[in-house]
Image: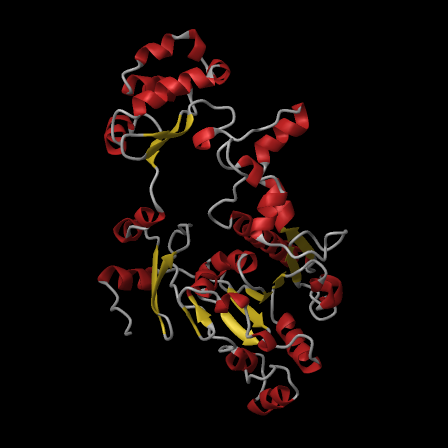
Length: 417
């Protein structure tokens, strides 16, 4: 499908676009599936060169084979995490492949991986193993449970970590089962934590002249997100229980309410919002009721207050309550994903990503949630398996003959770079 012509605004932005914030940063990434690629996705959007090293023996990143929208070694799942990156098919266990890897490390700022805890060292991806190649190299390892300890060899997956870290026990209806988030939030949080570590490491290496290891894990990142409930429990023994309709454990009312035709979210995080809420509900007398006088009182009388509010919310539609309350009280409709992905709204917020793919056609997704003054990302498709190998190796000074010799020695597996 031909690319849509640029609008006048797009052409103007291209002329005015400043250099990407991470232009000149090169990351060699041994990443696959969700957490690792999500960690480098925004780095790519911000201009970093992300070179994915994919195992030719397995067909590359496993997410290439996940439906829906899967064709050959391309998929919409892969596109979601890998737009704008480059791919080199390389066998890291092959001596010739290792020679190529070392040359890539010499040219790079960081080596980034998301593997089982014992694999970074087994594949030679740690600073101790690479400092002789490039003393400034930063080595970031994102694992399931860390690189040391009894659980280092365990595989880490989002659902397992949400279960084991206590997230699922805090999510869902009190009378229902523990519930995983509908999104892979443990993966995403760990990926962002790893990206933060990578940038911190590069700044440090450029200042000090030497790199180091930086490790994080899905499990540790998920534990860190327990945040204030963890502080409450560890400091004073106060546990957080599941509440109905996604209610906050201590602020009342701060939850969903059923309306005549759906649900509305309410966040009364300040006293003035509670006063405005009950006034908007024509329940102004509640402001002077001593049972509901402040955060503590409302917490002590949660059930009584919620019964009154719930009955009132059911008398009007969600839209009617939004029209009455929005602007005075923090409220929002509880919408479906399909409604949230309204193309017109996304385009207005500049959150719509569109580009053509030779196998998948027109790909549409959501983009970088960061506004950078003077810079607009230019989104491009994810790489075909190994498609950038030859150009990257030529950039390292490899001749065509040398590339062929390395291929003959098995550096690129059964595929030619």
